[in-house]
Length: 123
Image 1: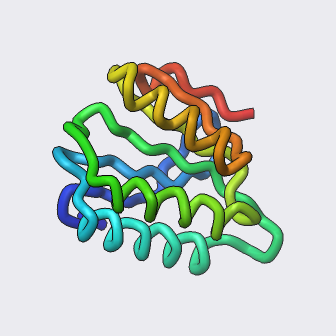
Image 2: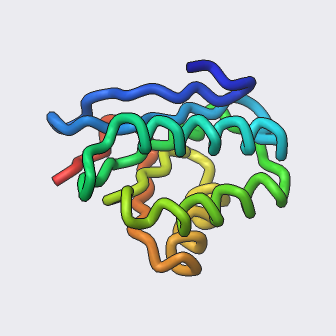
């Protein structure tokens, strides 16, 4: 599903089903809210009880984000912790990767970073 700057779809990576969010351009508060809503809907609709998904966030074409957009993502990560195994952040932007690692530290969540999708290895 295309959600104004964020595409949300299921893909197979390392032979595992993953929810992939591809962000285009600037992630605004509104776009983040719409994407997070779709993210939650996809997990609640497609996961069996006790099952966990891997999330891939492709940020290669993301140019920036609003502070409240980041806060929405942090809250969503906390809210969905029981449904998510790992979150992979793909970006060639060192600042975005550092922010992702910081978010993982703050939320105590498993967030991994990569420069490209080919670097992802889901166990």
